Every structure is written in C-alpha cells, then in structure tokens.
View: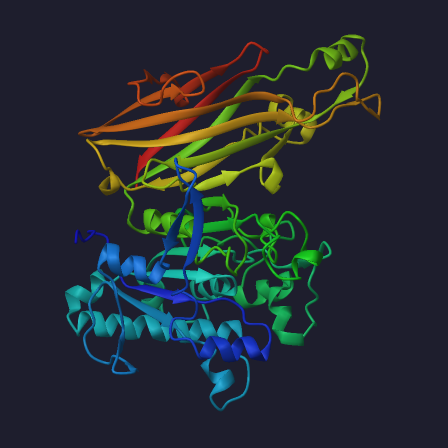
Length: 487
C-alpha cells in the first residue's frame, strides 16, 4: 500500500440528531455514520447491469491510505496511536448516558478541543518535536461544521494548542448561514429539538462574530478560508419530509446559499443531506475529501464572457429600441479521469445550482451597483498527482453549457419563435495538465467534435493567465481561464 506523505489524524464530527430516537441511534453506532456506504447500478455494453459499491469513507481511508480506527477490545485505546488514525467525536453521549441533556454547540466545541489535545498526546507520546509538528484534520457533517467553527472562531472556547493543531476542515452540508423554513430563518427562541441552534443570531453568539450584511458564513479571519472546504448538496428529493418546507435549491435541509463559507473552496454535488443518496456516504463526497486533504494541486475555473448574442427574434425587438431583459445560466460539471465517472463538481440548472448572472453584472457592473464585473467562477477542485494512472498527465473534463433565461420585452414574457432550453454554448472540454519540473503545460481538446485522446492544443495566455478561447457560429465568445496552483 502506498502511503501518502500528508497523513494526519482525522477527527469526524457528526451532524445534528433531531429527535430522541435519532440520538439513541447515534450513540449506539460506533462510527456515527462515517462507516456507511452506498451502491449504484450502471449499464454495461452487453445490456447487463453492474453494481458499483462504495464501501464508506471509513473503509476506503483504511484501504487506500492505511488509516485505522482507535477501538481495541471494545474500548477507545489509551496508549500510543499511529498518525493515520480516525477518531469519532462522540459529543451526544451525555444525552443518553445519565446527564439526560443535549450538548450545546459550545459544549461540543470544548469537548472537541479536549479531544484534539488527547489525540496529540497519544500520537506524539510526549515528544516535544513531534508535538510542534502535530496537525489534525477535522471532517464534519451538518451541525458538526458549526462545532468546528465554534472551536476555531470563538476565542473563549477551546485551547490555543487545539486551535493551532487544526490543519484543514472539510464540511458536508453544514448550515454555515443557518437553516430556513419556508424562506425564513428558524426563530432563535424555537427550543424544540434545539433547532434554534440554526438561527443566525444564535450562530453569531456561539461563534463570537459580527454578521456581515446579515450573514454569518464567514471565518472572521480566525482560520485560513482556503483550508476550509464546503461540499454543497443539490438533491432535496431523496431527503425526508423537511424538503417540502426547505425548498428546491437545497439538499433537503440546508439551502445551497447557506451551505458554504465566504472565500472557501466549495463544490456542488447532486446529493442529499443524508440517507441512501446522502453526501457523507457518497463516492463524490469521498473523492473531494481525499483530494482536498491529500491532493497537491488546485484548479479554479472561471469564465469571462465577451459576447452573449440574442436570439434573432429578440435581437429584432432590441434593435427596435424595445426594453429587453434577460439573464444567463452557466452550467459546469468537472470530472477527473478514472475507473468510474465521478463528478467532483456538478452545477446544473435542473439541480438549481447553475451560476446565475444578469447581463448588467457581466457587462455594465455600475448599473448593478458593482465596482467590477461579476464574472462566474464555475468550479474549484483539487487534484492529486499520485492518482495519475498513466504517464505524468492529470486529465479531467469540463462539461460546459451557457444558456439564457426567458426574455422579457417591454415587461411582457416573449414567446416568439423561442426554442425551449436552447443552449447559447455547449461543449465538453478535455484538459490535460502535464507536470514538467516547476512548470505547467496545459492542453485542451473540444471533445464534442474531436477525440479526447488526441494531444490537444496549448492554452492561450494573457495578463489574466492561461485560457481557452470559446466561440461558436451563434456569435458566442468567451475566455475560459484555468488557474492551476500547487496545494
């Protein structure tokens, strides 16, 4: 087994258990959901169906990276443990084992601080040099992410040693900006099942921060945002009945606009908050997790549109000096080459996760109250060069679509000769990143018309960086920039 040089202990912080029965189920499971996997069915070339099994993040970390748990003879080990250990933060125990009360977020964060120091002692064994170098990864689902933020952001919670030991944080479906029901943030006085934990005013209190524009999804400079990852789910249909009051643009419990931290890398995946199609027990979640924790390259994809032509019928209305209004949706799915097709980021209009921009935001920012154009960032993913299966080239695809919303002419919805869901631009681009000493060589193939196995064309470059020029016969033009950096 090939061990990765960036191995650190992983502490998993589980999410919110609402009812007493859920707390009981949580306490009675040794790994609190980190051991749950999933199966998928795919069709083969001969019409038969193949079953793909994702064992669980716990098992895959053990198989692929040499991690182990800390249980021995039915107890948590109290002796030396290896650096590649997985620890489950069991903060719901006091609700079930005598005290009879639910732990608050600040209490759970203090316990997490103690847990980090405990792991540090077991890993380092009192060696001062090892203690100075000690680092830990926090992996959290749902409310667990708020517990991690409480430790990192509230100076009154936890020790300095514990805070400084945290190297990276990965969150699945965390309500960083609270939970909304029917479009309204949950009340701060709703004590039932501790749902008030997700009120923005209460979040601001236990994180000890000042809201910005009414939002609490920022780290307030207490932790590097680039080392804090947010996985945002976009599948509400496979969650429980909460989806009916939370809304479509969500994972069934947390709305997409509330599931990320400002300035932090984030991806959108068509996954539910939990359940059989949940994000923790998904291959997509796991692949993002290990690439963020152990990867060595980050790719940020952004587009600068230069021309967004109008359909001919709408163009005639515009030329006739009529008032035309419309906006644009940018869809992008990013997928690395591998044995199975696993999208790392998947933003689509049908999942209510496409990037939305108005025409003024792109071309007339002053009319939109902006100081500069708001160009769409389509994706931010991490890659691991150790996963290269052939040669020294990292390969991934970008499935890109640009389309408009419906157009309004003089305040009336236009239906003239309109083709439903017509794309303004669409192509699947293959990007090849070759590592040559300290320099990147990037080549691309527009694979809708060319074989992706070809050598490809080198990227163009200007003062903003390397880019792919995009154009089609409709008159669409844009620059697709790739920022590839060491991580």
